[in-house]
Image (cartoon, rainbow, N blue to C red):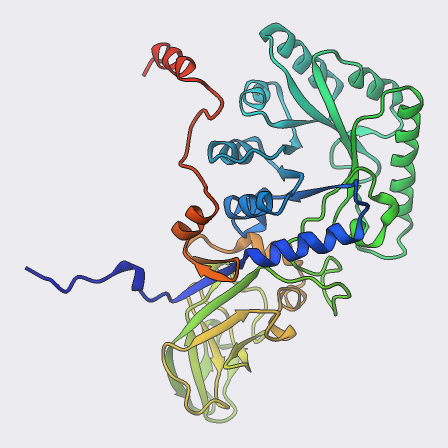
Length: 419
């Protein structure tokens, strides 16, 4: 009998991400400091909290006093409810009739962007003796979805519905991160005028909101009753690149390890396509990170990582599971050493913003692409912990399929099942 069984808690990790939930708290407190005390704060947790983990971020945000959470799709909101989240949740994507039962069942706030849908939802609620909240989506120039800002009769008719409680109204700024762009002022002016019209008619919703991250920091006239800073609360520069003028702390660090070290002779190439050729004998390390982990492949011979705080250039193409780097300047480098792949706190050259700029994209796209196979480690109250420990610390309950139903309701449901 083998008595020397391995402890799975001690298993080595080729790569991982660290999510600093204390940084989320700091960013929340910073945003609170720049908005009016009566203005609510909304955290978007769609797309798995921009890749940071929606359950962990939602519970940490609840502990920090967040007022509202936002998801893109109905199923994202249902899952949060099934794991015990109590904070109001707005489903930002427009609803359709098939969503009505689930919006009511899981106490999710719907987005209404169509008069016919609004009337159908109101009728559904009346016929079933139910209630539900909604926010009205307004198109002031983004031209993605929403009711046109000057379609006053339609907007007033929806706000006058008897059974659907239209608690809020929002629009989205298309150019808030482009200082001086006249479209931002135009959108804010259109939205402000609509609010004034509705106020005059006694129909102004309780929660009017407009500001994205850049809107929150650059356009205080867009704060209204609630702000929706996503990227800022996750700690990244809403301007996309360049020095950040705000005291934001990034939540995510991406780490890897050195798995192989070898020398490449002059005239030899590295990686697919041989886009990098050695001009002199070069010490090359292969690290365990690649596009299969969500690390961007697009540009070759582009980008850097840090080892012991020293900058190491990427050589050639990023592979699915590996990336090669020049470590000639670290003579005693060892297999197994940790690598900072993304860590803006350690050096701006490996920040999320710098990586995005190198690949002609935005930080959002990088964070949401982080693969699930990367192990997660969390920092909460200055302690590094595994998911199981964090779950216990934040009192995250077990999954419950129908969190708002009584035992009698569930008995009836089982009795009517065809399964």
